[in-house]
Image (cartoon, rainbow, N blue to C red; front, side, top):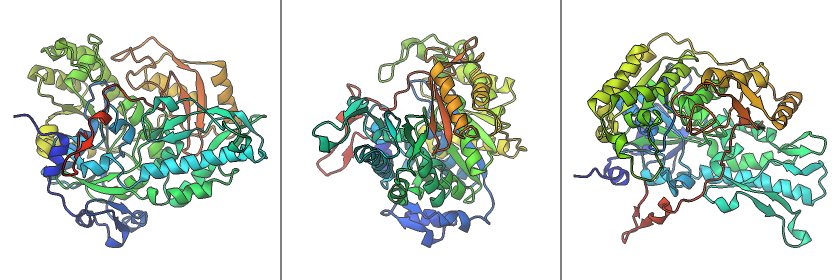
Length: 565
C-alpha cells in the first residue's frame, strides 16, 4: 500500500488546541494571541516572562551540501523534536516559514514530510498569520517612498542609477526580474530601470529574523540603505522618513507563530530569509522564547553546514547571544552518491538507475563532502552528530559506509526513519544528540567582529569552503573600501554563492580543492546587519517551471485544498 501524502497524513492528525500547547511550555495565556484553534502569535513579553526558567540545550540541524534530491533537513528537525519525547525529554522546535513562491513552484512547502511534519499543513504552507504579506508591504512601502522622493525633487540627491532597493512579491515570476517603472505621463513618476525579488530575499525579511525587540527592529529598518548619492554617500530609510511606517506594518509580524507537530511537539514557525543572499535561519525572537520552554530547543539552518550553519554560528548567534550545544548534520545515501560526481541529477526527473544500485564504495567517495561539513561544524567548537536519513531504496551496506565515515572521525551517528515512523523512528538520533549536548561546549566564532571585511571573507573561503584564496573584481574591491569607510566594517559577512557545491561552481561536487573564490560584487544589508559578497549568478526571483505545483493545486467539491505538497 502506498504511503499517504503529507496533506492526507496531516488531516488525520489529532491536534491539541494551541492554548494547550502554549500552556505545556509555560506560556501564560495573556501572552498568547490565537489565530483560530491551532495557531497563535506569541507576545514578545514572553522573552522576559520566561527568563528565569531553565535554559534548554540548543541544537542546530544542518546538512551536507544539498542536491536536487533533497536531504530532508526540515523533516529531520521535526522528527528529532518528536523523538525527544520518546526518550523522556521535552523539546521545542524552531523553523522558518514557507514562501508561497516555492510552494506553488517545484520545491513545495516547508512543513517537513511524512509522519514528521509541522501542522496545520495548509496554513503553514500558505498565508499562516500574514507575516510574508507584512514583509512585502513594508518593503514596497519603502520602494514607493524612494520613487516619490525622486519625483518630489530628490532633496537627498539620490543617484537614480545607483538605487539598490528593488520591489518584492511572494510569487515566482521571472518576468519581473528586470522592469522599467515610472512610465506614462510626467505625473506617473521618474522612469528608471529596477526589478522585483521574491519576498524571502527582502532585507526586511532578514531584519525580521535578526531583530531582538520591536525597538531593535525599528532601528534596523532605519539603517537600511536604499541607494547612494552622486558622491557615493549611502541614503537610508531613516533619511527618507520611511522606517516608522515600515515598523508599524511589521509590528505584529515580529511576534513568533506557535504551531505543533503531528505528535503535538511545540513548533515556532517564524521568518524565512533567503538562504543564498541572507543568513537562512528562523527568527532570533522565537529562539529567545524557545530556549526556556523545555529540555531542548531544536532549530534548523538553511542549505549545508558551509552556508546556513556557518551563518547561524557567526551571524545569528552573535545577535542572540545564545550558544549551541550540538549540531546535527543530515545526510542520505543518495546525496553522498551524488557527491561522488558519477551521476547527473535533475530536479523533477526520474533518478538515474545507477544511483539506486548498491554501491558503498561510491558512498565513501562522496563522503568527502560529509567529512568537510563535519570539519566545518567543529571549526566552531560544536559537537556534530550525523543523521542518516534512510530511504526505501537504501542498502544496509551503504548505511554502514556512512557510519564508518562518522566512526573514523569520532562522531556519533544514527540511522533515522522518522519520515515513515514519526518520532519513534528517530529515537536513536535523539539519544545521540542528548549525549553530544551533554559534552562541554567550546563554541567560538570563526572571526572577530573588528577584523577587516576582507579578512572575514578570506576566513570563510579558506577554512569553511576549502578555497586557496579570494579574487576580487575591481568593482568588489572598491565596494569593500567604501563599506569600511562608511563604518560598516564591523559587520559579519554572508557570502552569496551556490548552495550546490562547497565551492562557487555548482558543478564541483564532494569537497573540491585547488580553486579560488571569485567575488564579483559586494552588497550591504546594513539594516539586517551583514555584508554580502556575491560569488556567481544569484537568482533572487525564481521562475515557474513547466510542471509547477501551481498547476495541480486546487479545491475539491467539498472546498478542501488538494495538490498541496
